[in-house]
Amino acid sequence: MPSMHPLEKLFEPHWIAGGASESAIAEAEAALGVRFPPSYRSFLARFGAANGYGFAVAGLFHYPDKSIPPLWIDVVSLNLKWVDQLARGIPPRYVAIGDDGGDYTFYLDTGAPELEIPVVVLGPGADYVVVARNFDAYVIARSKDAIRRPFNVVF
Image (tube, rainbow, N blue to C red; front, side, top):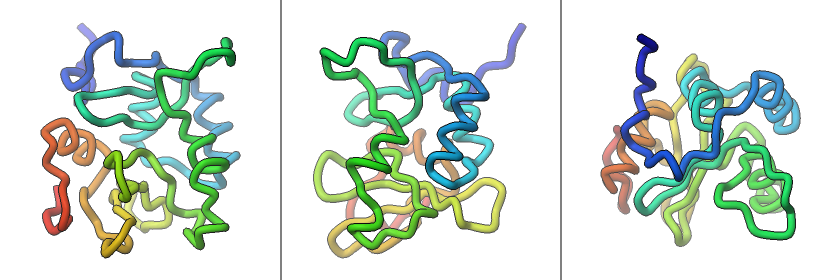
């Protein structure tokens, strides 16, 4: 029996984009100039991208019909087009993976020295505040609506 992914029970099947290939993951890393942590790579391979109750996790997915908006958020487009990191002064080591629906954006800190890197938040009064020790902890906390201002709890 295949082992269950640690995030498996957090997403309804119709909210999952479908797994990304290793080559798609490598292309995304190259486009962003970073190396994703193992937990995010595993998420991309298993889910691609996903929507939960009240939150979305940017990822990778096949999107052939450009005439309608996608159901998911593409991590490369989010970071290269929407966030426009250089214009905002955000170092490229930070990879946006979601937001709170308002002023706060959550980032993987790909420049951290650990293998499993922290997730930080950036927004008014929150400059690179660590909100989760790693990607899986971030998603679990978001699924419980536990990451909230003043962002003083690390999951």
